[in-house]
Image 1 (cartoon, rainbow, N blue to C red):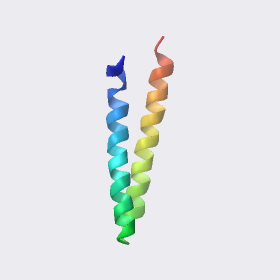
Image 2: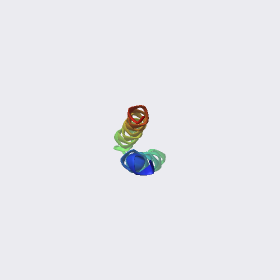
Image 3: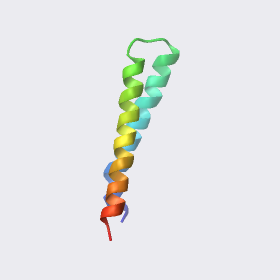
Length: 59
């Protein structure tokens, strides 16, 4: 059962890393910080939606 959630978990962790990087860039007032935060949060949201879909799809 855990194998089917491998892709959403990896996607969520990548999104979390990008979000942390974006927060660090925001603290340093770098120009791309907003884009990094947005990309990270979108990846995390996509991972959660994918995990919910896989959970509802299984019997």
